[in-house]
Image (cartoon, rainbow over all chains, first blue to last red; front, side):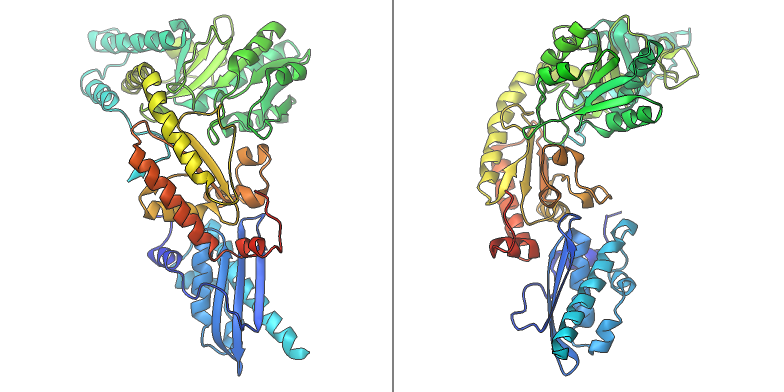
Length: 125
Length: 394
């Protein structure tokens, strides 16, 4: 059996929405290089809809795949829905992650939360 | 497909496979049995013991066959500890970058009241014998230092360390799992009291190894239950495996000069090629390292991704990244030579096979360059480094 599911390998080999979003209005970074995983999410939100999303990740195969899948799950969705994205949903969409890699999906959820928080903090000003 | 993870394990040689399969079919007797079937197996076993001893300059009586390197390490250390304890000596010296078979055994002994000094291995991964000498105390019962490191391939001055131990009357054990078959070893010339070896690192089968213990040092057995191996290791002997190990060892030792002459320029070519990658660094001394070992850190990327993408390109390698170990910490070896976590996660170990070609070396260099550049392309860590928001370490 392979280490990862076909889905994970697909998203790892061909990450979706990878890169920088120059006109992002919500940016979140989580993790640290010491632990070996950093995810950065860029959101472009208009009319309470996630119009565009991109990510950059320093991390293992499942971290890259989790970020990629998370962006797919929220792209074009209302902010309310993006806010509700759970790490389980990310892991399930990837046809599962090995137990010791579940933290990668948690990181993806947290990266989106951080980006949404950043967006909201800017709205209040 | 390029298999560049020979420090993890090696493919069995054709001759070793031949020895093993022939013996499995024809010499299945139990060496402890008195009839012909058994005695034939006993002959094979004792010939293997003599051949093993001859290769390392030991006496056949000084060889104990084990299930591999880990068992040999455990038995060596626990034996010396037991002897020390009887004399009230409960201090052991080792190094920070030993294999876990050594480090975990030492940790167990610490819980039993032993004191362990782990020597620093410096940035180059080399310990000076004078440092061992300075660490030896009245109550030191064992010095255990690996011959060649499994991750960064650095080779210690075993003869020098052995001399220091001999002069001070301290038992000296070396985990030679990565060295034997690849470097010329003579336990007498190098003042080695105990040495561990594992067959599958030199084209022998898995699950077989041996421990050399110098005459006069009492061995404690880990496995009770029979008179095999002079009562030092119970269990019916793995005759086909042991004989296949010796076939592989003889072959490998006979070819050390040839293999080294072939590997050195290829290894150095790969090192030179990978050095061209900006913000990268070779881990471990450039000269005093195994002819097969290349180990690099690349800043801004993580090792597991690197390995998966190299695998896609048909290159099997390994990394000291935390993600490849299932723990949060990267390799203790890389941390021991002073690489910080951030950088240690981005490591790559290539351990070359003797059949590596120049074209394969070129392909490895090209592939690693491509993959590192690709991963850096969407690494937020790399972005911050390039933007000057964080400082480059390498």
